[in-house]
Image (cartoon, rainbow, N blue to C red; front, side, top):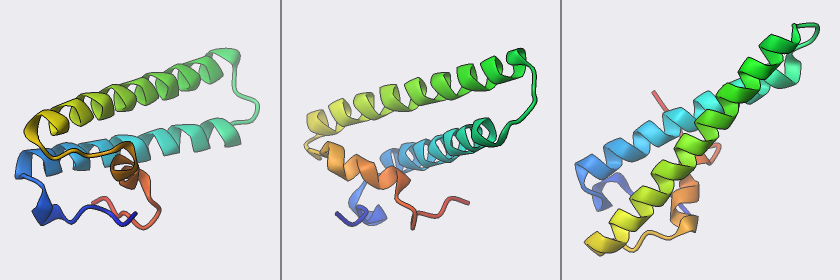
Length: 93
């Protein structure tokens, strides 16, 4: 499904989605660091793992809250609509 056009969403919702995109890209960077980390101490591995887990949970919570709010506002965004947060062609500035 193509991304939802920005003009279809109120500005506050679009701002929240932009924040979620940035968090998702931050999570991608943490995972990439974990994959390429070699030799670091156990503490470094644990810290990166904890940060990735926390970031993942924060993103999931925000998506569920936004989905609940969108239903209440009549936007009816589905999970597949929210998947557009992390499509490769989505650019974040």
